[in-house]
Length: 165
Image (cartoon, rainbow, N blue to C red; front, side, top):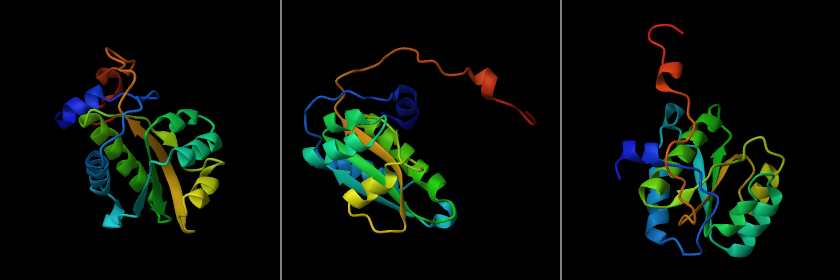
């Protein structure tokens, strides 16, 4: 699947089969994440891959809207060193993860991390050193659902402005 197709086909997937995700696919996804742009090329990110069921369950319980994390065979937690543009950099890496997962036939969903009440507890549970911020939690797996067809997105003519707003 090419990049444009992946961008157009990607959907937030919250239901997964219990089929394990191949290690090579996870490594490819993280490789794509590390290639994201970052301010001054600081690359402040670190990625914690969680495949252990009990640990995913604990993290899912901490979240407010990520209870389905427990059902995914893989969870990627994106952390960034506290730099001036940590959030922008971490969001770019997160988006690369979502697109790469889709391109590889996997489902994923962005669960918020930064500024959430559970961010510190997740950091501690995963053994991430002080000075890092949780950007996102991304459950990944083979989709048990395949939303198709049109989803509501504002029309291009409504969001595109030439030369001025």
